[in-house]
Amino acid sequence: MPVVLLVLSLCLLAGTASAQERAEGVRGTLSNEVDDEDVPVEGAVITVADASGEEVGEVTSDEDGSFALDLPGPGAYTATIDVESLPEGVALRDEARATLSFTLNPGQNRPLNFFFGEDTRQRATTTDRALQLGVEGIKLGLIIAITSVGLSLIFGTTGLTNFAHGELVTFGALVCWYLNFEAGIPLLWAAPLAIVLGGAASGLLDRGLWRPLRARGTGLIAMLVVSIGLSLLLRYLFLYQFGGRTRPFAEYGRQRQVDFLGLGLVGITPKDMVSIGISVVVLVTVALLITRTRMGKAMRAVADNPDLAASSGIDVQRVISVVWIVGGALAALGGVLVGLGEEVSWQMGFQLLLLMFAGITLGGLGTAFGALVGGFVIGLFINLSTLVVPTELKNVGALLVLVLVLLVRPQGILGRAERVG
Image 1 (cartoon, rainbow, N blue to C red):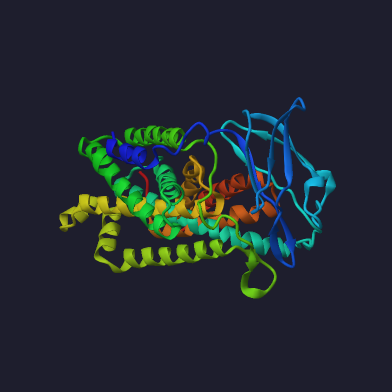
Image 2: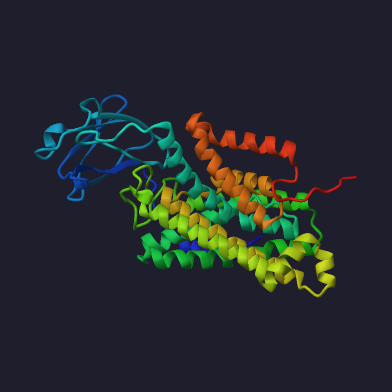
C-alpha cells in the first residue's frame, strides 16, 4: 500500500475542496472586441432561473467583465442577460441568444458565453480547418508522447501494464494547481516543483508497492489488477480533495490567438506555442538520454533482457527505480501542459490513459521511441478525424486505425516481430 504517496497527496491538496468550491454554478468573462482589442463589459446584469422559471440568482459583471454565481444544485437552468444594462455602444451579436439554456451536473461550474459586436470571422475552408486541427493535433500528440514514454519504459523493464499511470498525470496537474492557485507560487516555479514531486511520488510508489510485489514473485496479471485498484483509489481520492469541477491555473487563463507563421491561416495562443516548444525540447532530450548516456543504454538493456543485463553487471533494480522516477516526472509534466490548455480536473489523466495505451501499442510495446511515434500519430489523427466524423467520435476513429494497423503489423510501428510457439 503506497501510504507515502497518499499522505503526500493529502498534504498537498488538503483544504482545497470545501463545500463552496464544490458547489454548482456559472462563471464567465464578458468582453467586446474594439479595434482588435478585447474591452471588458462592466455592469451587465445576468439573471438565472430554474426549470420552472423561478429566479434563483442574479450577478453583475465587474470591471474586468468577470462574473461568477453559485446555484442551488444540479439541474436545468436558463441564464438571461439584461440588454438594457449593457454599456453604451455594446450590443449582443445575436439578440436571440440573450437567453441561454444549460444543464448543470453535480459539482460542475459551467462557463457562459455571450458574444457582442459584429461577427467579423471569415468562414473557414476545409484546408483552413485541416491546418488548424493539424496544429492542435501536433500539440495533443506531443503531450500524449510525453506521458506515454514512462508507461512504455515501465512495461519494457518490468512487464507491468500500469493502469494507474494516468493518475500520475492528474497528480502533477493538481499539485501544480495547488502551488499556483492556493499557495500563490508563480506558474513558472510551480510547474517545475510539481514535476519534481511527480517523479518523487512515482519513485516512492515503486519502492513502497511494486518492488515488494516483484520481490514476492507476484504475477503480472495480479499486478495489473492491483494497478486498476490503485487507479480507482487515487482517482476518487483526487475527486474527494479537489472536487468535480474543472479549474484553471491562476495565470495565462485567457489569451488571444495570434497568427501562426504570419500566413493568416492558423491561429494559436502563446501558451500553446510554449507547450509545443517545451514538448519538443523534452522529447529530444529524452531521446538523447536514452541513446547517448550509460543509464539510457542500461534501460534499453534491461528492457531487452533483464537477466542478461544483470549478468553483465547492470543494477536492474536501480535502473527500474530510475525508470519510475523519470516516467512519473514526464507524466506530471504532461498533466501540467494539459491543465494549461484545458484546465485541471480530477480525472484528466484517466481520460488520457486510453490514448496513451493506443500510442504505445501503435508505436511498439516497451520501446520509448515507439511511444514517441505512436503518441504523436494518435494525437494528430484524432484531431484531423473531426473533419469527417463528429467530435464526440474522434477517439473511436483513432482506435479503429489502431486495430487496422495492428492487423497488418502486430508488433507496432517500431516493435520487433517475435516468434510465438
